[in-house]
Length: 285
Image 1 (cartoon, rainbow, N blue to C red):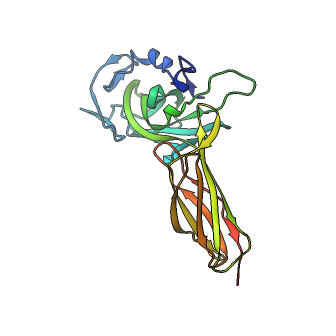
Image 2 (tube, one colour):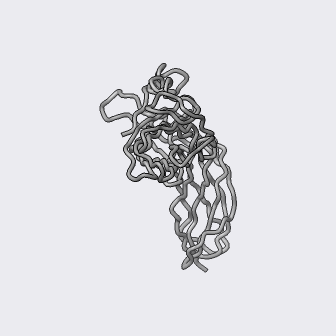
Image 3 (tube, rainbow, N blue to C red):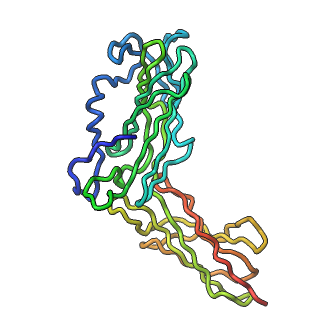
């Protein structure tokens, strides 16, 4: 299971930075240069590409290398306020000399930090599992993992042991987005409605607040109003409406045909996407 460091200064400035206390114990062995033996003695330099590829500067077939990292199968990690979210991080490398063990750190904005390790399932892949949450344990004052300030782009560092006894440290070998979950509601009325009359479409966009463990309205966001005719499977964007200061949405449209109305939010750098379930309106002649 992943480990996180309890944040200091809990309650200050409305947030809780996740201080990398565990990282301090790694600092002496975590150096942004490459190949080491027995996790301590530097024996050669490694050029690590921050785009996700790492290799020894003077690599031979027996040098341990890290070729990349895949987080959550390439998808964003989206966290709400009620459930833990578990996701895999897979470190990959060549078959020769082969990988045996991986120590993986995740580092995010404002001191966000997780660490865990695992034995490699094959000579070319080491998968570690991370668990994050933004809710307090029931009947507990234990600190939660995340604060709002931690949402955004995270990077992956890996210290990997090879089958030949050597190790390699690959900083910035991958990255991913950790986002706050969003939700949308919709209501179209009146129902039924006469053809040519006006339909009022309302709704609300909220997102997880990791500081309060609740959802709150998301202000000033562009949300698409979409329509799907009866007996069709395709939604078409009819208009774009900005949320109010409390996250509410409201607009009117002309009733033309039977079908479903919904709001669609594509997300932001820190917040995941959301789609409302379509609300059916019967249009009568």
